Image (spheres, rainbow over the protein chains, first blue to last red):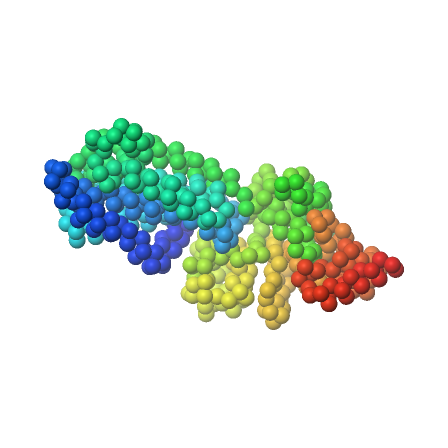
Length: 249
Length: 267
Protein backbone atom coordinates (compact mmCIF):
# COMPACT_ATOMS: atom_id res chain seq x y z
CA UNK A 1 0.00 0.00 0.00
CA UNK A 2 2.68 2.49 1.09
CA UNK A 3 5.00 1.60 -1.78
CA UNK A 4 2.23 2.14 -4.34
CA UNK A 5 1.34 5.52 -2.86
CA UNK A 6 5.02 6.41 -2.74
CA UNK A 7 5.66 5.55 -6.41
CA UNK A 8 2.56 7.50 -7.51
CA UNK A 9 3.77 10.45 -5.43
CA UNK A 10 7.28 10.16 -6.82
CA UNK A 11 5.97 10.17 -10.37
CA UNK A 12 4.12 13.46 -9.81
CA UNK A 13 7.20 15.00 -8.21
CA UNK A 14 9.51 13.89 -11.02
CA UNK A 15 7.17 15.13 -13.71
CA UNK A 16 6.84 18.47 -11.95
CA UNK A 17 10.52 19.12 -11.43
CA UNK A 18 11.42 17.97 -14.93
CA UNK A 19 9.29 20.57 -16.59
CA UNK A 20 11.27 23.67 -15.69
CA UNK A 21 9.27 25.77 -18.11
CA UNK A 22 6.13 24.99 -16.16
CA UNK A 23 7.66 25.94 -12.81
CA UNK A 24 9.03 29.23 -14.11
CA UNK A 25 5.88 29.91 -16.13
CA UNK A 26 3.57 29.38 -13.21
CA UNK A 27 5.61 31.78 -11.08
CA UNK A 28 4.96 34.56 -13.59
CA UNK A 29 1.37 35.16 -12.64
CA UNK A 30 1.84 35.38 -8.85
CA UNK A 31 4.85 37.64 -9.34
CA UNK A 32 2.87 39.91 -11.64
CA UNK A 33 0.05 40.16 -9.11
CA UNK A 34 2.49 40.83 -6.29
CA UNK A 35 4.30 43.58 -8.16
CA UNK A 36 1.41 45.27 -9.95
CA UNK A 37 -1.17 45.06 -7.18
CA UNK A 38 1.37 45.36 -4.42
CA UNK A 39 2.89 48.58 -5.68
CA UNK A 40 -0.11 49.83 -7.65
CA UNK A 41 -2.79 49.50 -5.00
CA UNK A 42 -0.45 49.71 -2.02
CA UNK A 43 -0.44 53.51 -1.58
CA UNK A 44 -4.24 53.77 -1.76
CA UNK A 45 -4.57 50.90 0.72
CA UNK A 46 -2.21 52.57 3.14
CA UNK A 47 -3.87 55.98 2.78
CA UNK A 48 -7.12 54.32 3.77
CA UNK A 49 -5.42 53.31 6.99
CA UNK A 50 -5.38 49.58 6.22
CA UNK A 51 -1.67 49.08 6.81
CA UNK A 52 0.98 47.62 4.54
CA UNK A 53 -0.57 46.16 1.40
CA UNK A 54 2.31 43.83 0.51
CA UNK A 55 1.88 42.22 3.93
CA UNK A 56 -1.84 41.85 3.32
CA UNK A 57 -1.50 40.65 -0.25
CA UNK A 58 1.26 38.02 0.03
CA UNK A 59 -0.74 35.30 1.85
CA UNK A 60 -3.45 35.75 -0.79
CA UNK A 61 -0.97 35.34 -3.62
CA UNK A 62 0.52 32.25 -1.96
CA UNK A 63 -2.98 30.80 -1.76
CA UNK A 64 -3.53 31.68 -5.42
CA UNK A 65 -0.41 29.90 -6.64
CA UNK A 66 -1.35 26.82 -4.59
CA UNK A 67 -4.89 26.96 -5.99
CA UNK A 68 -3.67 27.03 -9.60
CA UNK A 69 -0.89 24.43 -9.27
CA UNK A 70 -3.05 22.02 -7.28
CA UNK A 71 -6.04 22.33 -9.57
CA UNK A 72 -3.90 21.81 -12.62
CA UNK A 73 -2.16 18.73 -11.25
CA UNK A 74 -5.57 17.23 -10.44
CA UNK A 75 -6.93 17.96 -13.91
CA UNK A 76 -3.74 16.46 -15.35
CA UNK A 77 -5.53 13.14 -15.05
CA UNK A 78 -7.11 14.07 -18.37
CA UNK A 79 -3.66 14.01 -19.99
CA UNK A 80 -3.00 10.60 -18.45
CA UNK A 81 -6.28 9.47 -19.97
CA UNK A 82 -5.44 10.92 -23.39
CA UNK A 83 -1.84 9.75 -23.51
CA UNK A 84 -2.78 6.31 -22.28
CA UNK A 85 -0.77 6.13 -19.08
CA UNK A 86 -3.91 5.89 -16.99
CA UNK A 87 -4.61 2.44 -18.46
CA UNK A 88 -1.31 1.21 -17.07
CA UNK A 89 -2.36 2.16 -13.55
CA UNK A 90 -5.96 1.01 -13.94
CA UNK A 91 -5.14 -2.58 -15.00
CA UNK A 92 -2.59 -2.95 -12.18
CA UNK A 93 -3.64 -4.99 -9.13
CA UNK A 94 -3.88 -1.94 -6.88
CA UNK A 95 -6.95 -0.18 -5.60
CA UNK A 96 -8.03 3.10 -7.11
CA UNK A 97 -7.93 4.59 -3.63
CA UNK A 98 -4.16 3.99 -3.45
CA UNK A 99 -3.71 5.58 -6.88
CA UNK A 100 -5.86 8.53 -5.86
CA UNK A 101 -4.02 9.04 -2.54
CA UNK A 102 -0.60 8.89 -4.21
CA UNK A 103 -1.60 11.27 -6.98
CA UNK A 104 -3.19 13.72 -4.59
CA UNK A 105 -0.20 13.71 -2.25
CA UNK A 106 2.10 14.29 -5.21
CA UNK A 107 -0.01 17.11 -6.63
CA UNK A 108 -0.35 18.72 -3.20
CA UNK A 109 3.39 18.53 -2.57
CA UNK A 110 4.21 20.34 -5.79
CA UNK A 111 1.53 22.96 -5.07
CA UNK A 112 2.93 23.63 -1.61
CA UNK A 113 6.41 23.87 -3.10
CA UNK A 114 5.05 26.48 -5.49
CA UNK A 115 3.48 28.37 -2.59
CA UNK A 116 6.74 28.33 -0.64
CA UNK A 117 8.60 29.64 -3.69
CA UNK A 118 6.19 32.57 -3.85
CA UNK A 119 6.74 33.17 -0.14
CA UNK A 120 10.49 33.34 -0.68
CA UNK A 121 10.08 35.65 -3.69
CA UNK A 122 7.76 37.91 -1.74
CA UNK A 123 10.64 38.73 0.58
CA UNK A 124 12.21 40.57 -2.37
CA UNK A 125 9.22 42.92 -2.59
CA UNK A 126 9.23 43.63 1.11
CA UNK A 127 7.08 40.96 2.73
CA UNK A 128 8.16 39.94 6.25
CA UNK A 129 6.89 37.16 8.49
CA UNK A 130 5.77 38.56 11.82
CA UNK A 131 5.81 35.31 13.76
CA UNK A 132 8.14 32.44 12.95
CA UNK A 133 6.63 30.13 15.56
CA UNK A 134 3.32 29.84 13.76
CA UNK A 135 4.99 29.06 10.45
CA UNK A 136 4.28 25.29 10.76
CA UNK A 137 0.61 26.24 10.97
CA UNK A 138 0.96 28.15 7.72
CA UNK A 139 2.48 25.06 6.16
CA UNK A 140 -0.47 23.02 7.39
CA UNK A 141 -2.89 25.47 5.80
CA UNK A 142 -0.94 25.38 2.55
CA UNK A 143 -1.25 21.60 2.50
CA UNK A 144 -4.98 21.62 3.22
CA UNK A 145 -5.59 24.17 0.44
CA UNK A 146 -3.46 22.01 -1.86
CA UNK A 147 -5.39 18.83 -0.98
CA UNK A 148 -8.70 20.57 -1.47
CA UNK A 149 -7.94 21.76 -4.97
CA UNK A 150 -6.00 18.71 -6.15
CA UNK A 151 -9.07 16.73 -5.09
CA UNK A 152 -11.39 19.12 -6.91
CA UNK A 153 -9.16 18.93 -10.00
CA UNK A 154 -9.21 15.13 -9.89
CA UNK A 155 -12.99 15.10 -9.54
CA UNK A 156 -13.35 17.39 -12.56
CA UNK A 157 -10.62 15.60 -14.54
CA UNK A 158 -12.31 12.23 -14.01
CA UNK A 159 -15.39 13.55 -15.78
CA UNK A 160 -13.63 15.27 -18.69
CA UNK A 161 -12.69 13.60 -21.97
CA UNK A 162 -10.15 16.21 -23.07
CA UNK A 163 -8.83 19.64 -22.16
CA UNK A 164 -11.32 21.63 -24.25
CA UNK A 165 -13.19 22.62 -21.12
CA UNK A 166 -10.06 24.01 -19.53
CA UNK A 167 -10.81 27.65 -20.43
CA UNK A 168 -14.25 27.21 -18.97
CA UNK A 169 -12.81 25.96 -15.70
CA UNK A 170 -10.22 28.71 -15.68
CA UNK A 171 -12.70 31.56 -16.20
CA UNK A 172 -15.75 30.26 -14.37
CA UNK A 173 -14.16 28.41 -11.48
CA UNK A 174 -10.53 29.28 -10.78
CA UNK A 175 -10.69 33.04 -11.34
CA UNK A 176 -13.90 33.56 -9.31
CA UNK A 177 -12.52 31.35 -6.52
CA UNK A 178 -9.45 33.54 -6.38
CA UNK A 179 -11.08 36.97 -6.75
CA UNK A 180 -13.84 36.18 -4.26
CA UNK A 181 -11.56 34.85 -1.54
CA UNK A 182 -10.43 38.06 0.11
CA UNK A 183 -6.96 37.49 -1.32
CA UNK A 184 -6.82 40.97 -2.87
CA UNK A 185 -8.98 43.08 -0.56
CA UNK A 186 -10.30 42.89 3.02
CA UNK A 187 -13.81 41.47 3.30
CA UNK A 188 -14.82 44.00 5.93
CA UNK A 189 -17.23 46.65 4.73
CA UNK A 190 -17.86 45.09 1.32
CA UNK A 191 -21.44 44.85 -0.04
CA UNK A 192 -23.54 42.12 1.56
CA UNK A 193 -23.71 39.96 -1.59
CA UNK A 194 -19.95 39.92 -1.97
CA UNK A 195 -19.49 39.08 1.69
CA UNK A 196 -21.95 36.17 1.48
CA UNK A 197 -20.37 34.77 -1.68
CA UNK A 198 -16.90 35.04 -0.15
CA UNK A 199 -18.07 33.18 2.94
CA UNK A 200 -19.30 30.34 0.73
CA UNK A 201 -15.89 30.10 -0.92
CA UNK A 202 -13.61 27.62 0.86
CA UNK A 203 -10.51 29.46 -0.34
CA UNK A 204 -11.56 32.44 1.80
CA UNK A 205 -10.83 30.38 4.91
CA UNK A 206 -7.54 29.22 3.42
CA UNK A 207 -6.45 32.81 2.80
CA UNK A 208 -7.61 33.89 6.24
CA UNK A 209 -5.86 30.93 7.86
CA UNK A 210 -2.64 31.80 6.05
CA UNK A 211 -2.90 35.41 7.16
CA UNK A 212 -3.52 34.29 10.71
CA UNK A 213 -0.53 31.96 10.78
CA UNK A 214 1.88 34.19 8.84
CA UNK A 215 0.88 37.61 10.22
CA UNK A 216 -1.33 37.00 13.24
CA UNK A 217 -4.21 38.86 11.54
CA UNK A 218 -7.52 37.03 11.12
CA UNK A 219 -11.14 37.71 10.33
CA UNK A 220 -12.74 34.38 11.19
CA UNK A 221 -10.23 32.99 13.76
CA UNK A 222 -7.70 30.28 13.11
CA UNK A 223 -9.87 27.50 14.58
CA UNK A 224 -12.86 28.41 12.39
CA UNK A 225 -10.66 28.59 9.31
CA UNK A 226 -9.20 25.20 10.05
CA UNK A 227 -12.48 23.42 10.79
CA UNK A 228 -14.32 24.80 7.75
CA UNK A 229 -11.42 24.28 5.32
CA UNK A 230 -10.65 20.76 6.55
CA UNK A 231 -14.31 19.68 6.37
CA UNK A 232 -14.77 20.98 2.83
CA UNK A 233 -11.50 19.29 1.85
CA UNK A 234 -12.64 15.94 3.27
CA UNK A 235 -15.90 16.15 1.31
CA UNK A 236 -14.19 17.14 -1.94
CA UNK A 237 -11.60 14.36 -1.60
CA UNK A 238 -14.38 11.83 -1.03
CA UNK A 239 -16.20 13.08 -4.15
CA UNK A 240 -12.97 13.02 -6.17
CA UNK A 241 -12.28 9.47 -5.07
CA UNK A 242 -15.80 8.40 -5.97
CA UNK A 243 -15.61 9.89 -9.47
CA UNK A 244 -12.15 8.46 -10.02
CA UNK A 245 -13.07 4.96 -8.88
CA UNK A 246 -16.12 4.93 -11.17
CA UNK A 247 -14.19 6.02 -14.23
CA UNK A 248 -14.21 3.67 -17.24
CA UNK A 249 -11.99 4.10 -20.25
CA UNK B 1 -6.27 -29.16 -22.46
CA UNK B 2 -7.64 -27.06 -19.60
CA UNK B 3 -8.59 -23.57 -20.73
CA UNK B 4 -7.12 -20.49 -19.06
CA UNK B 5 -9.56 -18.07 -20.65
CA UNK B 6 -13.18 -18.99 -21.11
CA UNK B 7 -15.67 -16.53 -22.58
CA UNK B 8 -19.35 -17.33 -22.99
CA UNK B 9 -21.92 -15.17 -24.80
CA UNK B 10 -20.08 -11.91 -24.17
CA UNK B 11 -21.99 -8.82 -25.27
CA UNK B 12 -21.15 -5.13 -25.01
CA UNK B 13 -23.18 -2.23 -26.38
CA UNK B 14 -22.24 1.43 -26.72
CA UNK B 15 -25.25 3.74 -27.09
CA UNK B 16 -27.30 1.05 -28.77
CA UNK B 17 -24.45 -0.01 -31.05
CA UNK B 18 -23.39 -3.59 -30.42
CA UNK B 19 -19.60 -3.65 -30.34
CA UNK B 20 -19.29 -7.23 -29.15
CA UNK B 21 -22.17 -9.53 -30.02
CA UNK B 22 -22.62 -12.84 -28.21
CA UNK B 23 -18.98 -13.85 -28.48
CA UNK B 24 -17.75 -17.16 -27.06
CA UNK B 25 -14.30 -18.75 -27.13
CA UNK B 26 -11.91 -20.85 -25.08
CA UNK B 27 -8.14 -20.47 -24.89
CA UNK B 28 -5.97 -23.31 -23.62
CA UNK B 29 -3.12 -22.80 -21.17
CA UNK B 30 0.12 -22.04 -23.01
CA UNK B 31 -1.62 -21.41 -26.31
CA UNK B 32 -1.04 -18.57 -28.78
CA UNK B 33 -4.44 -17.26 -29.76
CA UNK B 34 -5.16 -14.61 -32.41
CA UNK B 35 -8.17 -12.38 -32.69
CA UNK B 36 -8.24 -11.49 -36.36
CA UNK B 37 -10.50 -8.80 -37.72
CA UNK B 38 -10.73 -5.36 -39.31
CA UNK B 39 -10.64 -2.11 -37.34
CA UNK B 40 -13.80 -1.62 -35.36
CA UNK B 41 -14.64 -5.32 -35.29
CA UNK B 42 -14.70 -5.41 -31.48
CA UNK B 43 -11.21 -6.70 -30.78
CA UNK B 44 -10.08 -3.91 -28.48
CA UNK B 45 -13.43 -3.82 -26.70
CA UNK B 46 -13.12 -7.55 -25.96
CA UNK B 47 -9.59 -7.06 -24.59
CA UNK B 48 -10.74 -4.13 -22.46
CA UNK B 49 -13.48 -6.27 -20.95
CA UNK B 50 -11.13 -9.20 -20.31
CA UNK B 51 -8.63 -6.87 -18.65
CA UNK B 52 -11.20 -5.22 -16.33
CA UNK B 53 -11.17 -1.83 -18.05
CA UNK B 54 -14.76 -2.14 -19.22
CA UNK B 55 -17.78 -3.91 -17.81
CA UNK B 56 -19.68 -6.27 -20.12
CA UNK B 57 -23.45 -5.99 -20.64
CA UNK B 58 -23.90 -9.76 -20.67
CA UNK B 59 -21.86 -12.93 -20.69
CA UNK B 60 -19.66 -15.00 -18.43
CA UNK B 61 -15.86 -14.74 -18.35
CA UNK B 62 -13.36 -16.83 -16.42
CA UNK B 63 -9.74 -15.77 -16.64
CA UNK B 64 -7.19 -17.92 -14.81
CA UNK B 65 -9.96 -19.11 -12.51
CA UNK B 66 -11.37 -15.67 -11.66
CA UNK B 67 -14.15 -13.45 -12.98
CA UNK B 68 -13.00 -9.97 -14.15
CA UNK B 69 -16.38 -8.48 -13.21
CA UNK B 70 -16.66 -9.78 -9.66
CA UNK B 71 -13.00 -10.15 -8.66
CA UNK B 72 -10.99 -7.73 -10.81
CA UNK B 73 -7.96 -7.71 -8.51
CA UNK B 74 -7.43 -11.47 -8.77
CA UNK B 75 -7.62 -11.16 -12.56
CA UNK B 76 -5.30 -8.13 -12.68
CA UNK B 77 -2.54 -10.10 -11.02
CA UNK B 78 -2.54 -12.80 -13.67
CA UNK B 79 -2.12 -10.88 -16.90
CA UNK B 80 0.21 -8.45 -18.60
CA UNK B 81 -0.91 -6.23 -21.45
CA UNK B 82 0.45 -4.20 -24.31
CA UNK B 83 -2.17 -1.72 -25.42
CA UNK B 84 -2.74 -0.60 -28.97
CA UNK B 85 -1.72 2.96 -28.11
CA UNK B 86 1.22 3.75 -25.88
CA UNK B 87 0.52 3.66 -22.17
CA UNK B 88 4.01 4.75 -21.13
CA UNK B 89 4.78 7.90 -19.20
CA UNK B 90 6.66 10.05 -21.69
CA UNK B 91 8.13 12.26 -19.00
CA UNK B 92 9.82 9.34 -17.27
CA UNK B 93 12.83 7.35 -18.42
CA UNK B 94 12.61 3.79 -19.71
CA UNK B 95 14.00 2.51 -16.41
CA UNK B 96 11.58 4.59 -14.37
CA UNK B 97 8.64 3.25 -16.36
CA UNK B 98 9.80 -0.30 -15.61
CA UNK B 99 10.41 0.53 -11.95
CA UNK B 100 6.95 2.07 -11.64
CA UNK B 101 5.35 -1.04 -13.08
CA UNK B 102 7.36 -3.35 -10.82
CA UNK B 103 6.27 -1.43 -7.71
CA UNK B 104 2.62 -1.43 -8.79
CA UNK B 105 2.75 -5.21 -9.24
CA UNK B 106 4.66 -5.64 -5.97
CA UNK B 107 7.69 -7.37 -7.46
CA UNK B 108 10.29 -7.39 -4.64
CA UNK B 109 13.14 -4.94 -5.11
CA UNK B 110 15.94 -7.41 -5.84
CA UNK B 111 13.90 -9.43 -8.31
CA UNK B 112 12.68 -6.21 -9.84
CA UNK B 113 16.15 -4.89 -10.55
CA UNK B 114 17.29 -8.21 -11.97
CA UNK B 115 14.29 -8.61 -14.22
CA UNK B 116 14.41 -5.03 -15.46
CA UNK B 117 18.00 -5.62 -16.49
CA UNK B 118 17.16 -8.92 -18.25
CA UNK B 119 14.08 -7.56 -19.99
CA UNK B 120 15.65 -4.29 -21.13
CA UNK B 121 18.55 -6.34 -22.49
CA UNK B 122 16.09 -8.59 -24.26
CA UNK B 123 14.44 -5.70 -26.10
CA UNK B 124 17.76 -3.94 -26.71
CA UNK B 125 16.95 -0.94 -24.60
CA UNK B 126 19.36 -1.34 -21.69
CA UNK B 127 21.69 1.29 -23.10
CA UNK B 128 18.80 3.72 -23.47
CA UNK B 129 17.41 3.07 -19.99
CA UNK B 130 18.03 6.59 -18.67
CA UNK B 131 16.58 8.43 -21.63
CA UNK B 132 13.14 10.00 -21.40
CA UNK B 133 10.54 7.93 -23.23
CA UNK B 134 9.41 10.97 -25.21
CA UNK B 135 12.68 10.78 -27.14
CA UNK B 136 11.95 7.18 -28.23
CA UNK B 137 10.77 6.07 -31.67
CA UNK B 138 7.52 4.14 -32.08
CA UNK B 139 9.36 0.83 -32.27
CA UNK B 140 11.39 1.53 -29.15
CA UNK B 141 8.25 2.47 -27.25
CA UNK B 142 6.52 -0.71 -28.30
CA UNK B 143 9.51 -2.81 -27.26
CA UNK B 144 9.59 -1.06 -23.91
CA UNK B 145 5.88 -1.72 -23.42
CA UNK B 146 6.39 -5.39 -24.14
CA UNK B 147 9.27 -5.58 -21.67
CA UNK B 148 7.19 -3.75 -19.09
CA UNK B 149 4.21 -6.05 -19.56
CA UNK B 150 6.42 -9.05 -18.81
CA UNK B 151 8.02 -7.68 -15.66
CA UNK B 152 5.63 -9.36 -13.23
CA UNK B 153 5.77 -12.73 -15.10
CA UNK B 154 2.12 -12.80 -16.14
CA UNK B 155 0.37 -16.09 -16.90
CA UNK B 156 -1.53 -14.46 -19.75
CA UNK B 157 -0.09 -11.81 -22.03
CA UNK B 158 -2.51 -9.63 -23.98
CA UNK B 159 -1.18 -7.82 -27.02
CA UNK B 160 -3.53 -5.45 -28.81
CA UNK B 161 -2.17 -4.97 -32.34
CA UNK B 162 1.40 -5.39 -31.04
CA UNK B 163 3.13 -4.63 -34.33
CA UNK B 164 0.84 -1.95 -35.72
CA UNK B 165 2.83 0.69 -37.58
CA UNK B 166 6.18 -1.06 -37.10
CA UNK B 167 8.66 -1.92 -39.83
CA UNK B 168 8.96 -5.60 -40.88
CA UNK B 169 12.28 -6.08 -39.14
CA UNK B 170 10.99 -4.85 -35.78
CA UNK B 171 7.84 -6.92 -36.28
CA UNK B 172 9.88 -10.11 -36.67
CA UNK B 173 12.05 -9.18 -33.75
CA UNK B 174 9.10 -8.65 -31.47
CA UNK B 175 7.53 -11.94 -32.52
CA UNK B 176 10.72 -13.78 -31.69
CA UNK B 177 10.52 -12.50 -28.12
CA UNK B 178 6.88 -13.38 -27.80
CA UNK B 179 7.32 -16.91 -29.11
CA UNK B 180 10.33 -17.52 -26.87
CA UNK B 181 8.30 -16.36 -23.94
CA UNK B 182 5.49 -18.70 -24.87
CA UNK B 183 7.87 -21.62 -25.23
CA UNK B 184 10.07 -21.02 -22.20
CA UNK B 185 7.48 -19.84 -19.68
CA UNK B 186 4.30 -21.41 -21.08
CA UNK B 187 2.81 -17.91 -21.09
CA UNK B 188 -0.56 -17.87 -22.79
CA UNK B 189 -0.58 -15.28 -25.57
CA UNK B 190 -3.76 -13.51 -26.67
CA UNK B 191 -3.17 -11.06 -29.49
CA UNK B 192 -5.31 -9.08 -31.88
CA UNK B 193 -4.26 -8.19 -35.38
CA UNK B 194 -5.54 -7.24 -38.76
CA UNK B 195 -2.47 -8.68 -40.47
CA UNK B 196 -3.37 -12.06 -42.00
CA UNK B 197 0.21 -13.27 -42.20
CA UNK B 198 0.85 -12.36 -38.59
CA UNK B 199 -2.08 -14.43 -37.41
CA UNK B 200 -1.29 -17.35 -39.69
CA UNK B 201 2.41 -17.46 -38.89
CA UNK B 202 2.23 -17.06 -35.13
CA UNK B 203 -1.07 -18.28 -33.79
CA UNK B 204 -2.00 -21.84 -33.00
CA UNK B 205 -5.62 -20.90 -32.92
CA UNK B 206 -7.45 -18.05 -34.64
CA UNK B 207 -10.86 -16.50 -34.13
CA UNK B 208 -12.08 -14.31 -36.97
CA UNK B 209 -14.20 -11.47 -35.67
CA UNK B 210 -16.30 -9.15 -37.80
CA UNK B 211 -18.94 -6.62 -36.73
CA UNK B 212 -18.65 -7.91 -33.17
CA UNK B 213 -19.35 -11.53 -34.08
CA UNK B 214 -17.01 -14.48 -34.33
CA UNK B 215 -17.51 -15.89 -37.82
CA UNK B 216 -15.02 -18.74 -37.58
CA UNK B 217 -12.49 -20.17 -35.17
CA UNK B 218 -9.93 -22.94 -35.15
CA UNK B 219 -6.40 -23.55 -36.38
CA UNK B 220 -5.43 -21.65 -39.55
CA UNK B 221 -5.83 -24.90 -41.50
CA UNK B 222 -9.26 -25.62 -40.10
CA UNK B 223 -10.41 -22.14 -41.09
CA UNK B 224 -9.06 -22.54 -44.61
CA UNK B 225 -10.74 -25.90 -44.92
CA UNK B 226 -14.02 -24.53 -43.63
CA UNK B 227 -13.95 -21.78 -46.24
CA UNK B 228 -12.56 -24.14 -48.90
CA UNK B 229 -9.75 -21.73 -49.73
CA UNK B 230 -6.01 -22.04 -50.25
CA UNK B 231 -4.95 -19.11 -48.08
CA UNK B 232 -6.26 -17.23 -45.08
CA UNK B 233 -6.87 -14.02 -46.98
CA UNK B 234 -9.31 -15.68 -49.37
CA UNK B 235 -10.85 -17.58 -46.49
CA UNK B 236 -11.41 -14.29 -44.68
CA UNK B 237 -13.14 -12.79 -47.70
CA UNK B 238 -15.30 -15.87 -48.16
CA UNK B 239 -16.33 -15.87 -44.51
CA UNK B 240 -16.99 -12.17 -44.03
CA UNK B 241 -17.84 -10.99 -47.52
CA UNK B 242 -15.16 -8.28 -47.55
CA UNK B 243 -11.42 -7.75 -47.35
CA UNK B 244 -9.86 -7.06 -44.00
CA UNK B 245 -8.35 -3.68 -44.68
CA UNK B 246 -10.87 -2.32 -47.09
CA UNK B 247 -10.90 1.12 -45.52
CA UNK B 248 -7.15 1.46 -45.85
CA UNK B 249 -6.64 0.27 -49.39
CA UNK B 250 -6.67 2.33 -52.54
CA UNK B 251 -9.23 2.02 -55.30
CA UNK B 252 -7.39 -0.59 -57.36
CA UNK B 253 -7.02 -2.87 -54.37
CA UNK B 254 -10.64 -2.31 -53.57
CA UNK B 255 -11.66 -3.37 -57.05
CA UNK B 256 -9.52 -6.48 -56.84
CA UNK B 257 -11.00 -7.34 -53.49
CA UNK B 258 -14.53 -6.89 -54.82
CA UNK B 259 -13.79 -9.11 -57.75
CA UNK B 260 -12.55 -11.74 -55.37
CA UNK B 261 -15.62 -11.40 -53.19
CA UNK B 262 -17.82 -11.74 -56.22
CA UNK B 263 -15.98 -14.80 -57.49
CA UNK B 264 -15.95 -16.27 -54.02
CA UNK B 265 -19.69 -15.97 -53.78
CA UNK B 266 -20.41 -17.52 -57.13
CA UNK B 267 -18.43 -20.58 -56.42
